[in-house]
Length: 574
Image (tube, rainbow, N blue to C red; front, side, top):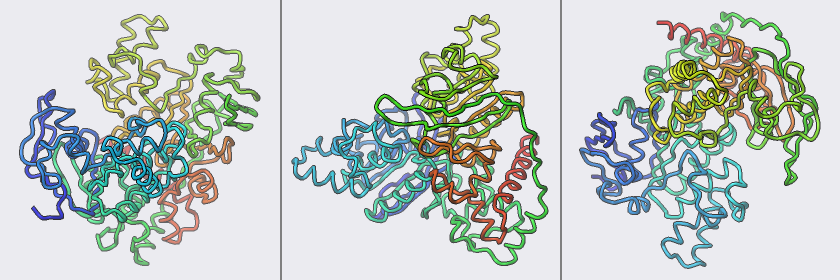
């Protein structure tokens, strides 16, 4: 093995003790020091199992039978143990809250150093150095729960970097971050990799967001096997992502719709390095000119109205400042904005979990202040961002059935409605499983199912697709779209700009407790001022349209989304 190879899988396979079939088959993969590798693939493809082999959770936490050979740092990984591997591999989890140990940020970063009995002076100096590297030195004395999602991720990164590891492993680092913070996270990972020379492994569904900074290789997995191992440029010129159920970058899909043949020499993996000839730009303009203008929808009657809603938490945080929002019957809309903008507080006020000090909220003309939380729940369903905060039963079926049983619904009807909902949410095969056996993303779908089964008049979902691959994302969103077409009003609180564009014609933008925009999703993401103020991220379609000399990026976005929805409807019907 070459000296600069830090991870080597040789004809490696793995089968969990609890499963009848292997999860990994004949994996051959080498990762070099200083290399940045993206591992992508749909849920259940084996990418998380590869991560668990690298960081030692397999076989130390998840037992099973391994075949072939895995060496890390030149040593047999399966014999190193968790402690031995922790000196070589640092893992930053998707759920940063699950990684905190200390009472303050400084204590959390210092945890590994304390375990190694590092002298106090040396430990303090090392913590300061690493905190500065990841830009959290200003919050060292804060409790972990007091800092933002992006800062939590930086603290988790600092906590594993103090060991001066050779490998940094990121498990879906973008799942819980707003668009601007996610962009900053990718930039931070890029800086850390260049400064430290670590091998960096990123496991993520969101290909376009990761490719904001260059990666050396993409490893695409499917059904426990490596389907592709090579450059991002070459991969995007193929149909591999489409066949694997992974979303391509939007601008790549747009170029393919326009009939532009992609080659690796065009550098399609980087929007800013993308090389288009004058003729290819003309192809995009011609495609735009020939796309029909999407029809405008008729205005619907008002369902919910908030006027002058103002709320301050007991500690003095002024979370909502004179909010005016109208939601119409049968509408599907997004509420977007940076972490801490007031989105979740607004949804809690709608559901009655907090009581505004000023303003009014009405549903079908009824003042919500006169209704209890239970009475509101008969009309308004709420799915929280963290599924662990909603789940109270040990079995999946019982969790989804809980609300119906509390309402005294006959058991035969309960069974039918629960089974129908589980099928639509892709959980029917797990109906008799314990909730504890599910992944974070699967738990999320259980909580959505537990609200959808109640057939509410309006449903609010906080980050409904966080952590979901494109296939499950599409299943959930198509189901919500189907519900919406049946008359259910759907409100999505989301950081996912693709979701906002594809499924919600209208977006309400929160910033610092105020509504700063209420217009079409395409208008929001093509307005640089709103994007910057609300910590959003301009769609790559905006940049492509400007590159190709199309002066109406908002209309280009609208026509692309309409075309994309038409193509996907045809694909689903085949």
